[in-house]
Amino acid sequence: MDTMRTKTARRALSVTALVAAGLALTACGPHDPAGAAGPSSGGSNATQSSTGGTTSASNGSAAQSGTGSSSGTGSAGTGSSGSSSAACHTANLSFSSSWGMAEGEALINMKNIGSTTCSMHGFPGVDLKGRDGTVSAARSTTTVPTVSLSPGQTTHFTLHFPPNHTGGSGVTFTDVVVTPPNETHSHTMSLGINVPADSNSSPAITVDPVGAGK
Image (cartoon, rainbow, N blue to C red; front, side):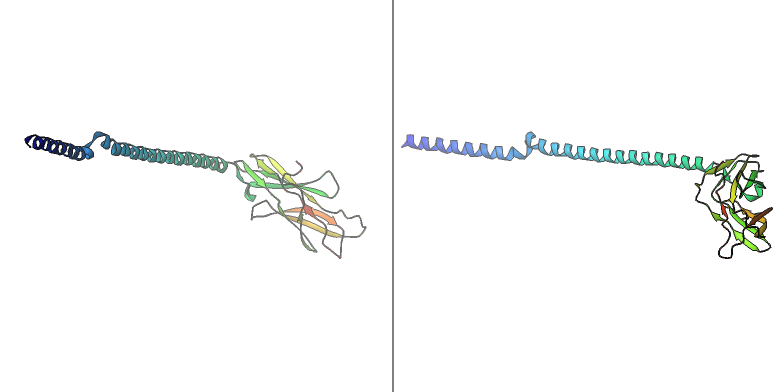
């Protein structure tokens, strides 16, 4: 009997020892270094994500910086464009006329008498005045160039009109009123032009853009 009691006591001690060991292992689980490595790794990922965000922000700054640089270049380009010659004003031009190479053509010459370079682009306004009234020249279909005039330089435009070969008195104009392109002030000069009288329509008088055919 004593022997059986001794064996039973030993088994009880062995079971108790195993249970105690299991409890000890379970209690150590949350503080296991390997278990701590998981959150540390997660923290590392979070740091990488944060670093990635910083990189994105940096790239964004670079993009903004690039945009700013581009804008600056655009601004410089605008400045360069703005520094080009200004439009020629009527007050800084002198006017004269001459006959063209072909019959029915009159050249209106414009000289830059200002102190700086100026430019013109477009059709001038031309009104012919005479005893019988006023006729405005229509625009031709000629391509419009841009003309730059340094001080003292001259350009011209051509006025086309049908010469009077009818034998009749026709219609005579004695003055021409010229308004340079993009200007509101006009210049009136003497110019004698005789065209056929036409009871059905106005005389076919047209004007080319400034500098065309030069």
